[in-house]
Image (cartoon, rainbow, N blue to C red; front, side, top):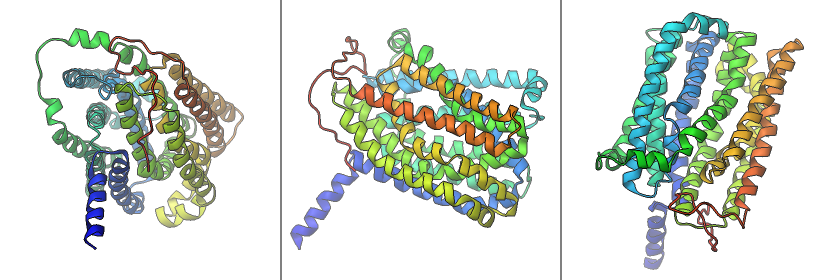
Length: 450
């Protein structure tokens, strides 16, 4: 009996360490609590706020996401790969300073050109666009701190961040509904959530946020030039490809349609937020750790994670094809029955993206510039081309969405095969000289066991 208890204590001690299994468990636990809160709040929020309010909210979030993806100039992506702590500290400060400048420029553009932007969006973006610069700033800082936490493989802190963010968002949106039922309540609640998440992450990264020695920024910039010049634009293309369906639906079929799609995306994203992102973040942490240690043979790791995510992705796709028309009116309210058809249109892309999207980090980690840019440009072309064909043909919003998400599905298939090809390259030899992503031949067993 004593041996059994001792064995159990030893195994629990292993789980609590910063290994990949404990990382997944911690992230899933945090995500589970956060998503349970979102699920419980969704039926209330959809009865407090109209589809039009959700449409304005979703549109502003999409705009902030696109701008925010480049706000830090891509320096945040280099933080987990930095070979030295001092270099990571400089990258964090550079990223946060760049985000602040980007947010200020966004505010100026909104103030000076809101009429022109309203014409492009086909609805009056004011006063909702006032929230965009704040969303850009807080989202960018949030991402920078998340990457810093991944560098430390502090997965439990990321789990805490996820829960804290959702508590702030949902709590703020519910409380503000007593004051206003407009998009202002939803947008302000989103800001509260970001602030909660930033505070949780800042506590964990106090060491990295401390000021190190002066100077050295030019050297850090030279060593990481690919990130602002290549991967930052790539991040914009990637985010634009994800946000285009909502932006185009809102422009072509009205802001209410954007609201239906926004809520549908919010519900269909729950499985990815619960498991896919958790596994993807652990995969990112483990892969970058292996690359910093000059370990190769990551193909096995890639295939193992693909198999786990692929099973869940297939189940999610089947569920989304069948259940939404029956569940949406009951759970969200009769006003949201049409959103069920929107959710069905996303089924294949959501299921496949559950596997392919987290694994696409391989292209960043190996700095496959042309490959990453080609993938993102192809998605934009597919989504815009197929969507525009449906729109010009007089098809409905749902039919146009089926076409757009078909383009996304094709893109995910190509992305997965490219990631497999990258990790399968046995004869590739990255540039020497301290490149944090450099890898050299040598056997290595995958440590990502679930």
